[in-house]
Image 1 (cartoon, one colour):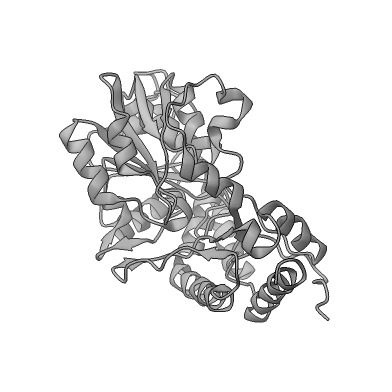
Image 2 (cartoon, rainbow, N blue to C red; image 1 turned 90 degrees about the vertical axis):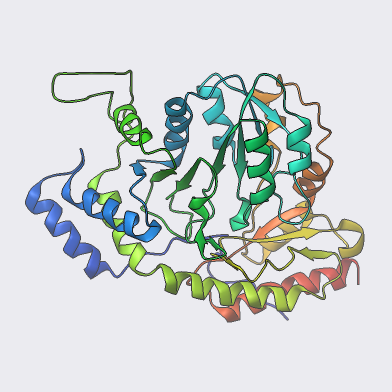
Length: 378
């Protein structure tokens, strides 16, 4: 008989570096008393990220949401932007805060990213950009979206919150599009407690973003634009430096967990796994999504979500409901029926995955899922 876990198994748990290593960094902060405003640790973190991504076109922020808001502002995006309803609300909020109208179109069924055909069909004279999301660490249809953006003279912006460390054909995921926003929130496989980053093609944007994240100050006496306060602080930067050292190890552990889930769940009726990505993609295994077919499995994703909690396993309906169904966006006209996005949102769960999750715990989670199928549909 399967017993519930004694301690909760959450959908994610942040990696933390050895406490002694972090303490040593804190001693430097205590010595300098430099807590924010482009301190030495932030400068060091920035340089390490420039080296990691092989570009100087990087700007750091205190969170990803403000990073994306400032990206849209700094790039002068206006009018309509074609985007996905299958994302975290911050993607759409960034458009709202810039008085941009989101145009929601459907996703493709394999990896849940924007469907390029639907994107092209939704372009109007007011469209200025495409805002696509690399969902769960899966790259978007990069070539197709780039071709559409080029032919229609649109900016191509990626919400890359889920894809830190992902490579496609030996190129960083940040090499695609005009700009990518990365989130360093504690729930991510790479984090800095909280934080965000923009990587962009146009070198001149760096100065604009630096102004916008620091009240528009050019120097001590000049304010050149109405900016806000979105600066990353020294403690965030310190955590980022420490976690970056362990990134390869984190990804390797998550890869083993992902492989075990896929092995144990592949034959469970009613459980659909994301198709294997191309071997040219270096994944970060950010999330472990499954789709639950109620008829085949024997219960809905909602019911499975509730049942798993009885074993102290906490999955997540991620993303449910669709952004366009939230009260604050119901007044946005949606012409696309969003057939795939609605089906996926109704069926999808993300299962626990994090570097410290034991393989034996993964086996037990899969045993629970199988037992629920046998009780209800097998």
